[in-house]
Each structure stands twice: as C-alpha cells, then as structure tokens.
Length: 453
Ligand code: BES
Ligand code: MN
Ligand code: ZN
Image (cartoon, rainbow, N blue to C red):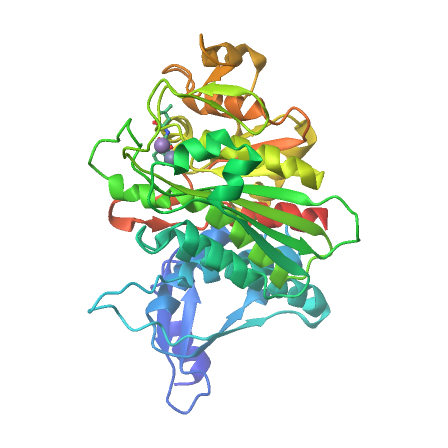
C-alpha cells in the first residue's frame, strides 16, 4: 500500500470533529514516526473550536514519549484571526497544557521528554509567527512561574520566599527589586497592613519589582498583588474543610510577579512596577481582634469587624504606597472574596474599575487571550454598606454583594488613581481533584501590557 492510501484508510472511520484525535503509526523508515490527526470543523474554524483542537492535541503530546513534534499551523484557518493571533493562541494553549508542578512525591511520573515543538507556517507569515512565539514563550514562562508559586506549600511559600523569588527576577536587565520589612512597614504608617501581619511569627513584606524598559520618567503601569501566603481567617477563624486551599491566597501576588516575569522576558519597551503585599493571616496573641480600629497609610481609619477580610487591609496600604510612582494606571489582583466565586464561578475573573477606558482595555485583552473577566459595579450606592460607628469605614459590608463591597473598600484608596481591581478568587486556582493554581490572570495582564507597548 502507498503511504497516502495507508493514511487515507486509517482515517476512514475517524470522527472528524474538534477535540477528536487519531494516532497513525508510520512505517519505521519514515523520518516522521507518528502522525497525529486532529479532528476539525469545516471551513474557517471558530476560535473556540481551534482552542478545543489544540487542547486535544496537547493532551496527546503530554503523554507521548518523544522529544520533538511538529504542528502544521498552515492546516488551520481560524475565523477573524491573522497568523500572529493563531500562533499566539496555539502556543499559549500548548504551553499551559504541558505545565506540570514538580511535587515531592515518591511515585511522581517522570517529566515528559518533549522539549521542542516546531510550528509549520507559511513563509510569508514567518516574521509575525516568530514574534508570536516570542510573546507566547514569555507568557508561558510568566504563567509557569505564577503557578509554581501558587502550588508551593504554605510552609515553603511564605513572605520571605516570595521576596526571594522577586529578587531572582531582578537579576535581569533594567530590573530592580526592593523589599520593605515589617519595621519599615510600621514606621511608614501602614497600620492596616500591620494589623494583618502582626499575628504571624513569619514576618510580612512589601515587595517591589521595578522594570524600566521604557523611557526615563515615563509613568509606569503599576500592578499590585495580594500575597497572603496562608489565610486562616485570623481570630475570625475559617472552618476546617478545604482550609489548605488558602495557601492559594497569594495567587494575586503570583500573577503580578508572573506578569512582570513575562514583560521582562519579552523586553517590552515600557515601565512596570509590581508591588506585592505579602503576609500570613494567623490567629495568635498578637493578632487583631474584631472591633480593633487601625489607621491606614492614607490616614483613613478602619474598624476591623472581621479579621478574615484581611486582603483589603494589606492592599489598601499597598495601593497608597504605590501613589509615589505616579503610575499611569494601577491594577490590583487578589483572591479577595468568596462572594466573587458565587457571582461568577471560575470562568471569569471579577473586574472593577473607576475608569471605563482601562476596564475596556482589560476586558478586550482577556477576550483575546482566552482569560476572561466580567465587569461588576463599584457604584457609590454600595458604599453605605461599609459604614462604621467607630472609624471612617468598616472592613466588611453585609451579606449582600460581597465582591462589590470589597471593591468599594479599595475604591476609597484609589481616588487619585486610574484604577482597576481583579477579583480572582474563582479563576486563580481550582479545588477538588484538579487542585492547583491556574496561572490566571497572567495571560490577561500580559496581553493588556503588550497592547500598551
Ligand atoms: N481569601 C479569602 C477569599 C477567598 C475565599 C478566596 C475562598 C478564595 C476562595 C478572603 O480573605 C476572605 O476570607 N474573604 C471573606 C470576606 C468576608 C469576611 C467579608 C469571604 O469571602 O468570606
Ligand atoms: Mn480571609
Ligand atoms: Zn484572604
């Protein structure tokens, strides 16, 4: 039988649909050992179908025992996408799918041997494909970095560890890192941050990575990440079940460091500052009590009615601190509320903003790269929920609209800024059998920054 006929007969009963795959072993003499046939739809394929197709291919690649694979991108024409976009999308899906956390397990599977994927593209789109691969590789490195940080156990990934990881980023060109310790945090007047970190024997840190790829004096994009390396709830202690998942409460911090990593790797021509508010929320004799009143760096006072609403307490002071960079925009990222998971589940991150153009740019970036957000309001109408009889505000609202009132709390510290807030409580990690960090919203953030560059 001729090779063509052989392949033809092999695919005869194949169900040609996105997500279906078929391996065809080729004769030993061939340079190509095996052919993976990918089911598709007819005509120009939708981005969603293309995603499904590449995801299915990745599942096959992950378990296969070979070093190199070639993907024929020429075979696909994706509706409304040019070569750059198709290549970006394909490489993003493959690299995210091939991620594996190196867990300390005795029966851990050896890592896949695959270390090279060749993309076959039309000669005319070579330059844009190369650019797409460069961007995709940078994003991949940033996402893997964020996922690794998230997946580390909380006895390893504490504020000191986050500071060390941030310092490692600063070995790159045009990058520096500054770590502010508790003594300075206290001296600066960050009473809200201190009220969270004081209960822990592991000292908190404010970690700042500065990347200067742009012109001198050009205002930076500022990213701020919630880095609670473990959230017990403090004196307002959380219930036991699934409390281990509160190691993921630093995924906002992981995402801003991951995005910084991608921006540094891609050598983007702009200025970026990533600020991480790193602390552990523990119950102890030094921990805050419900009813405590603290003074924030902004001068506003807060009555702590629930010590489990700690994210906003570290973030408000980090936001005020960031004002000194006179940033173009400020985007904070936080696993902030369980209420956001109730509102949106895990498909979309919650987006809040005091600036429509910024909000739309973020939504567009997320749509493009398949890491979507959905905007929720931060209307003044909700502010009354934070009323306190004993301070400028309480740190919690009522039962209603918990994700919104949390954002409204932060909004009180961003009056002078173009600001957006991403609540990633649902999107940054999964629980249950697939427990692990997702690396979101690094793709959204990186795409946003890329669009600005
Ligand atoms: N880190 C949690 C939010 C969270 C919950 C993230 C579940 C991911 C999964 C946050 O610090 C918290 O405890 N929020 C409280 C706020 C409440 C006390 C107003 C919450 O959502 O219950
Ligand atoms: Mn909490
Ligand atoms: Zn928390």
